[in-house]
Image (cartoon, rainbow, N blue to C red):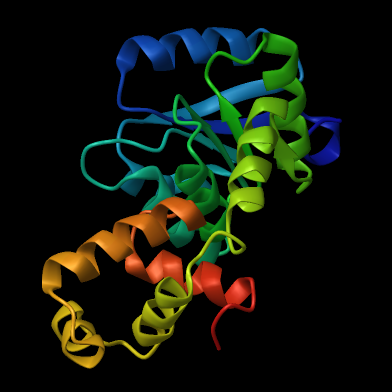
Length: 210
């Protein structure tokens, strides 16, 4: 698999650590059928990918300024190239946030070079690519969700889906704000998400709320 007209796959590499970028560039350029056409240290620079003619964006998650999740969402919305997230974060909510933002691939930075090579080619071709350990982490998160939610947690999820504030939820169920916050922490953990918006989206995806 090569890029357009048999040319090497053109990669834009975005990571806020110069040493990491230098190492990744050397690895990617060494594949022969891949070439790094640009680098960036902030997710906002992903906007240049289209004008640079990149076939794929290889991007970290945590960066100062615009993070990789936001940059992925903006890139997909703008019709930019597919995104391969390359990060050290293997937690369920990071993975799902990236995939929900539109990332085509998700790989960890300690992946073997042949796995990185295949992931770049597959992502450029629009094929979903998840490292085995990432897929296992995601499956584990999915397997833990739903059945372990208590009835009250589902009720609170339903209230979240209406846009109710913590104070409104506390008043409705006649419980303290601290208790609401504790329920939310448990809900986020069980659904493998990091905030209320993601919790509602995941609950709707699973049919827990409408």
